[in-house]
Structure formats: structure tokens, C-alpha cells
Length: 207
Image (cartoon, rainbow, N blue to C red; front, side, top):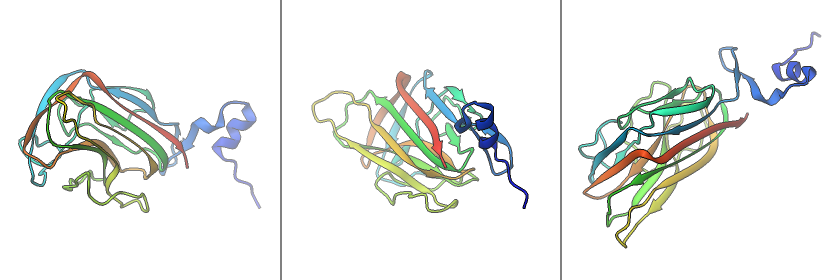
């Protein structure tokens, strides 16, 4: 029976780091995905309200908003869409496997209600679904799974600004899209700051 020579075996025999090259669903050889992103474009006001969101980009009302990061660097960042407008920034998963993602962004408005942070996972078509941070969690059980992944809640009652954050590690599928998401179940106009004071990092761990 003929043997199958895998990419990692080829690289192992050559003495290089075989764990940094992988094959995607289309048979393309890609380097280990990794990115570091930051927003430097300014800020925007999100008018949170106790109502379902209507789109990724709506900032006039709704439970949730999606911060935007306009600068990115790393390895194999072609799946990262930079943006200077809420909702348009996203990362398309380039390879099925285990990833870690982490983000934080400054909210430079004092609010009396708690603010939640999570990641939103959408399908390969990036179909909008009115998910909420305190809703059903994405658990990565299939390529068609969507929902929110991770959870953190902050409430500042002493009149200071704060930086919500969230970190997740889980299985994601090639073609899915992921975005940082903030949510608040209250009528509050909050300034989401994107002049540094923020980050979004991500990396592929393995399969």
C-alpha cells in the first residue's frame, strides 16, 4: 500500500518547524494563522437599549455592538477584515481547529448598568443573528454552529471608565466568522474608544 507523505512529515525531515504549516479544506498549504489588531481611528457612540439588534453595524439602538479594529499584523492575516466603523471588522476562520482569541476595548463613559463582553460567531455567509451576550453559548460542536462564545461582565458604580474584555479558547470551523461583541440591557449612550486603549489578538493552536 502506498504511503501518504504529510506536509508536517516533509517539514520534519527538513529540520524546520513542522507545526507551523497546515493544509486547509481546499488543499492549500498555509502558515499557522496568528494576528494582533488594534483600533486607532477614534471612537463611536453606541446607543444601547433593551431591544434586539437589527444588524452588525447599527449603533442607533439595540442590546449589542461590535467594536472595530483598523490595523492588523501577524501571520496569514488574509481572513481579517479591518474597519473603522462598528460591525464591519471580523475574522474569517481560515482553518478548522482550536483557536484562542482575546480582546479588550475602553468604554470612556461612566454607566450605572453592567456591560457584558463576548465573541459572536456567525456562519460562512456571515448571516446576522440577533445574539445577546447572556444568550446560549457556542460550543463548537459542528461547522454550522453559531452564537456567542465566552462571557465577562463588568459594572462600575464608582464613576470611573472601564475596559471590558473577553478571552476564549475553542474549536472553530473554516469559513465561520468571529467578532468581539459588547452588550448592555439598558438605555445608555456609551462611547466606545478606538484610539489605542484596545486590542484583539488571535492564534491557531492546533487541530
